[in-house]
Length: 214
Image 1 (cartoon, helix red, strand yellow):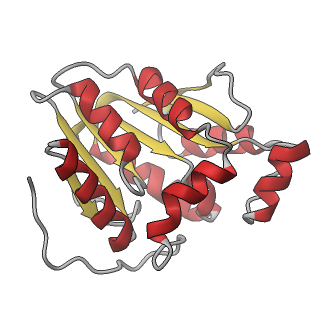
Image 2 (image 1 turned 30 degrees about the vertical axis):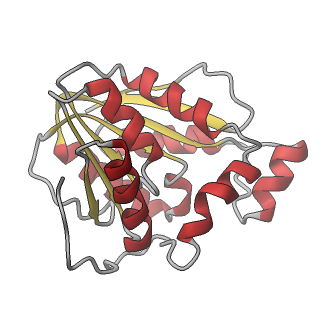
Image 3 (image 1 turned 90 degrees about the vertical axis):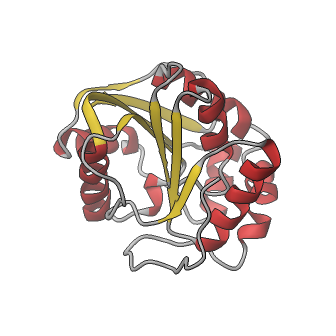
């Protein structure tokens, strides 16, 4: 298991969860009405991960999606997760150790990934991109494309613009999104250099799913 002794909060224009990281899992479970595990399962399925592949989770939080992806690629594969919050990464590493998974969790912002060009077959991001201003979305996604192999897959799961109760919950946590957010995000992903950007037909009251190729 990779160990790290000098994690610091990196400079980033995006939001960083720090002091309440230990409450993150419980809060997201409550706010999403328990729908997060299903969304993560759908994200891994959409990425079409295969045994032996290398997968990166961008904005991994406490690591649940990363660990699900790690199970799919198996011991012969490689799994990594980055987040700008050292506190979130600490929790993710503890989860990996408890499950006996060798996952490379690192503290890093999306716009400065600590990986070489073309290291990964696939990249995932769940419920993180909406935290970023548009210019950082573009820079960060271009950086994700850099670390993907040619033709590598990207799957982005993010909040769905919603009305009613789900929309009210989104508003409470400060993420009321424009009605055309899915199209805006598709456009930014394309501008970052990805091809075949498609909005997937995944049934979810909470999330939109977008898949693209690098």
